Length: 364
Image (cartoon, rainbow, N blue to C red):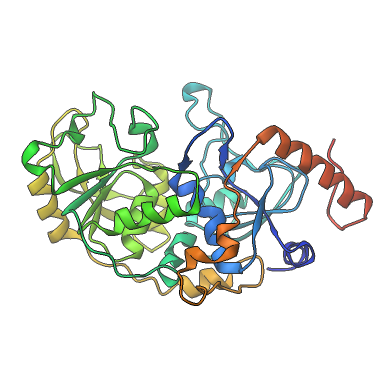
């Protein structure tokens, strides 16, 4: 399912990519979102340039629960997640997500079958599932010393601020770490410095844990992809302890988690239930991870790479360095003036339309 987007990328030497990036008003990256340009670059060997999610310009989408934010023109999806709501987080004002009539979605691969159906307007698709971050160990696998017995990764919504250290909301008692566990239980935030080095350091912070428990989707993805024993840290259940969650798209489990693991063929997921208002038995939690976790099979990584909308040409580390020293990675721009981004995109769309490129309409 390559073609037009690959032609554009080869012609201009850069892949147009929409992602939930940082603005100039933010002094941080959200870890999972920042992995999108990095994984596309690692897999394709090409730099990327950011395009608004709403546009008439041809563009790609990759890592993150972002599919519902795209509208207009041609969009190629690769391992993308999608909410069932057009405006998640709006409570009673939420509207169901349906692709707009002026959008032409090319669904090469999605995070899972839930996102596939949503992006295809209720129809099936290629059946290629997985998060592009599954591929990360192919590029970054240098040995790392373990520092903590357990890493506990918080979702952005659970943080009281946007500091680089994790500060949970005071009401979230399950994140209280007693002094006798201070050296063994490490709270991890998805708030990351604005640089590729910051993203690398966050990956290695997770890899330095013997076990992981996470409410962050990409905390789970990193742990699973590197074979770190892990459990989803579910707020469900009246009593703390291991639980089996039914992965029902119409149920109460986080749809991102449902999508990810249903893409691996699972209908239930072993998790650790921990009510937010109760303190955590950290020793019991670690024992539950040891007893419950089983490694996943990432054999579908090749299919995911083959589904890349541009011809795969994976980057290799430069001689004497790591993949993070590669000039294409070091040259990635991860923070943007969104207003200027829209102006630039409109000008680019007009130029492409005037050039008569197929499928490109001038922006209004």
